Length: 132
View 1: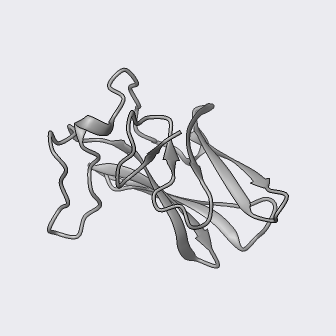
View 2: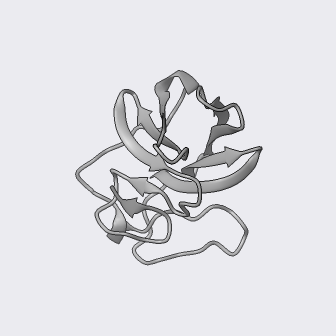
View 3: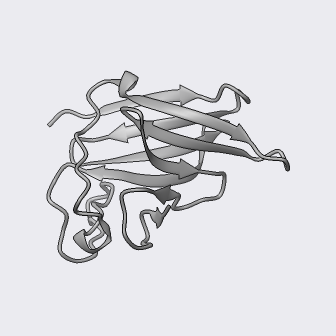
């Protein structure tokens, strides 16, 4: 299954960008500062969620296990970069935050140092996403 990868530059500070990476198995978002990933969050699985925690030995990104995912929310994979919108905010202390929306619906939030970031699609905190 072919994947998709694209970058959404920050409107407030050009040193930041969000990279969306969907490899056809699983999708993640990465917040980059000067092209270094400073935060990340799981977005969705293409494949069926594994029953137990599972870190691939082949270096591929991990699928989020079933116990963490809200089974009542169905996500269709991204097919076009226009389906993603990033809403950038600068906090009072100068930190950049970004909300990630898929087809107009909030799905995740990243701030520098958040590994993992927050997701509206999980029901409990895990190593790939925290509950929003």
